[in-house]
Amino acid sequence: MAGDAEEKPGGNPGPSVETQRAERNIWLLKVPNAVAYQWKQPPPVLGKLVLSIDPMGDPDDPNTTQFLMDVAAKDPEAPAKSYDLNFTKDVVPMHIFSETTQGKLAVEGKVEHKFDMKPTSIGDEEYRKLCRERLTKSLVKSRTVQRLENDRGSYMRPIPFTTFPVSSKDKKKPIAPPKQPEGKRIRRERNELEDIVFKLFERQANWSLKQLVHETDQPVAFLKEVLNDLCIYNKRGANQGTYELKPEYKRTGTDDQGADAKDSTTKS
Image (cartoon, rainbow, N blue to C red; front, side):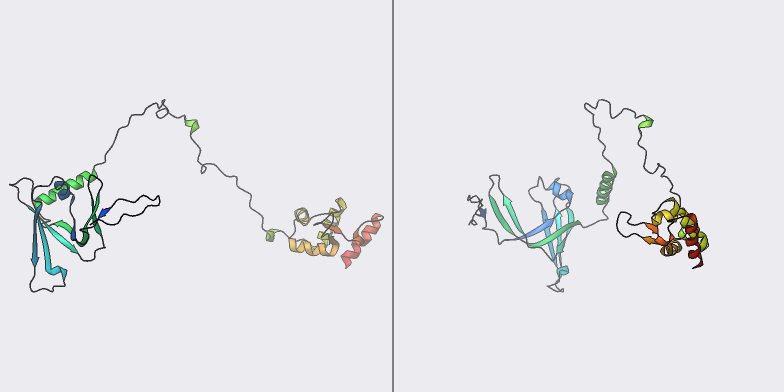
């Protein structure tokens, strides 16, 4: 009995799968590499399976049933090697498929039980020898020699010392001078600061706050307090963001008039 062929998007049916043995129960056995290598060219008899059941045990307990596999050796005179088959209770649903050389597919059955094959006598001298050989092979590093073709000598050419790239860590970054905190500025007397402000506005009519702080070297809060009494802050226009003297403090006439304005400010 063959299964129905699957319809492919192109319209061509896929290959048929033989499903006559799909419900047959199969045991899945995981074998060591040595046994797998020996079974690549199998002898007439692979081995003998021994099933031991404890009559006094619980039938539902898998530990009451023991499986032993005696693998037949290639040499008829050599003794058979015994392996324990550890039973796995939880098995993922799986099916076994086969394919012939002509490309025919068939379902051979479904996996009922799964076993792991392990040597019965781990203390056996032959088994210890096999473990030592595996360890020795794992420690040996395989090295290969490859011949360079058309390398033009660039791989073996010495590099001049001056062409070595300089690490970014070796480059010394310029050390920025520490910023002087505002609290370190020494506050002057108020009338002394007012004199300095008047002299600055004699040099030019408009100053920004940053320029005035640089010129007076005074705390910003104290300087703004004095500027609010003496100056007007331009919020818009051509001189936006700058201070200029109030009209009553500007020198419009002689120097004596400016001096009188300064004296009146100091007294206030």
